[in-house]
Amino acid sequence: MQDSKRSIFSWALYDWANSAFATTVMAGFFPVFFTSYWAVGATTQQGTFYLGLANSIGSLLVAVFAPFVGAIADYGTYKKRLLVFFAYVGAILTASLWFIQMGNWQLAVLFYVVGSIGFSGANTFYDSLLPSVASEKKVDFVSSLGYGLGYIGGGLLFLLNVLMFLFPEIFGFADEAIAIKASFVTVGIWWIVFTIPLILFVKEEESRSSLPLREAIRKGLKETASTIANIRELRTLSTFLIAYWLYIDGVDTIIRMAVNYGTALAFPSESLIIALLITQFVAFPSALAYSWFGKKIGIKQALLVAICSYAVIAFMGYFMSKPIHFYLLAICIGLFQGGIQALSRSYYTRLIPKEKSAQFFGFFNMLGKFAAIVGPLLMGIVTIATGNNRFGIISLILLFIGGGFLLLRVNEEQGKKECEAFSAKHNSLI
Image (tube, rainbow, N blue to C red):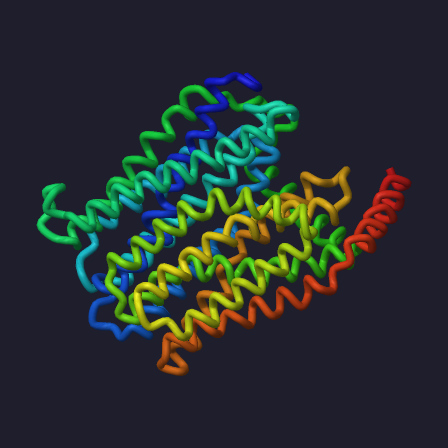
């Protein structure tokens, strides 16, 4: 089935399906609706703390379960079945937000956290199916196709949901609240429907080393421990990974908490949602342009520019007072969002032993799942402690300062020498 046009498109279409959760729910309407509807009666500072706690708990649970689901993906023939299970759990919990009544923030947090686990868990198996649909020659193109369809699909449904929110009467809704709750239902339906092609046309390769579920988990955890031990031998790589974890945590926190912050500043909900649309459609072409920028000035330098830019964004966020300021910051976030993610991944390839790339990228992806744990919690705690949401957003500068400082200490040439020594040592033991 490798390189079959039907299986390639069906695989990539899943990115179209699940990106609706990332745009409409995670970044868009959930933060707005959580503060104004489910956490009604709470102060804006309490609302920020609750939402930050929800994001941190969701990210932590996903990260804790990552070695388990990764083990199953590597050693079992359960990829497609478990992708569908996680995806449909996420879709059903998202659509079920329709039933949660005003003021019930605890149940809203529970549904959101489980939906996030479904979203991230399914992505693990989605990624692991890529070698089944694309040969090494086409894997870059197919991966990019999924990425592109995700931006388009998530953006299109989000655009429809924004129109539902702005003009509820045209769509037959009594008010904005009903329109937003209906948007959660559309995400669930969208997610389920566009997963069907993957179910029908993507064939999972039978693994020769297929293990029982318990043995797969045990072996996967053992390899995770082995990878950590290997990383400790590579000092340059270790420094980069800590830097990456700090600055990408700040990036993900801004993405997830921006709308909540705008709500706390009493900006109109429609302004916040339109700003998210701006970010969505600026991010994709900017990611491609930033790749060119990285080639011109160097990948590490381009990452430092992006980190400094995010620190400036957090600093400027402290002084926002008008919706136009939020629009401008949305453009700035879009300019650097895709670039910092893409270049971080490509820079990582320069610091790892090529013969262990799959193992080390598995750890890299797991570390990425730990992002957005510290940031939302930091933002929530600082907001509660100071009684001021502005101090919450500016506290994220600490993550960018820490990440940027450590990245400055990364020496790519030294990292390559360490990789050569590592490879020579371990190859001699084989």
